[in-house]
Image 1 (spheres, rainbow, N blue to C red):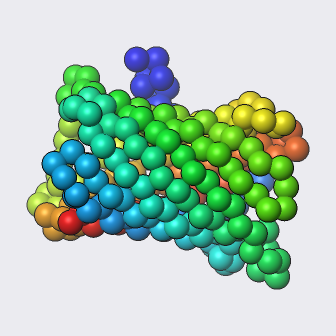
Image 2: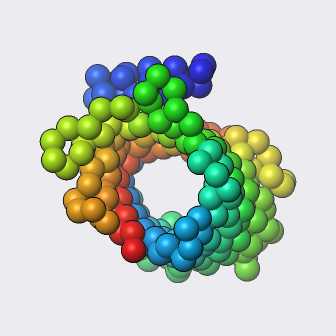
Image 3: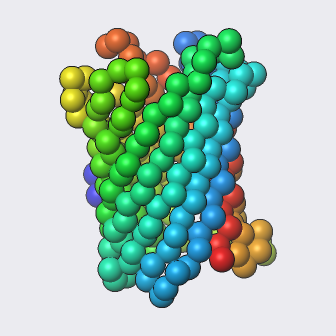
Length: 220
């Protein structure tokens, strides 16, 4: 309950303040596309790809490709795992660096006072060819409002995700606070528009980034 309250308060403050209020922040655009294929009643095959533009959305610096399985144990719990291949670079004139991330996750789904929420716990092993491997734990809490508007079923949501490194550089090193709107384009196609305040630590220094994101999910 405390975490839910903090997220709601943070989202309200985020909307009432200026989006680009951080002098040391960079404006970025992220686009995510998902495809879900129902293999059996409780088993789904999920593909995901994501692209990111930084330096005030002028440089394409990140891409990942993901394939995984999700199995619903019951209405409250889903478990699964997959593999993500990442390519990232620090500038347009720098080479792409690969990263391989196998992962496992389990997610709890619930409802409180009409608000639906899910709490995802994810464990990743990060393999690099150019530096020491690391591990990472990610926890993402998403809350969806009980209201839907227009024929598109526009629905507000907020989420908060923390990243905790396991290895030489241990501890919290990233937080993603997001708020946006989800809606249905067709019966099988859903989309999201969101703003994210991304806080990331590097060399013991925290920096904030302002992200405008889009997400499209197609279910078969």
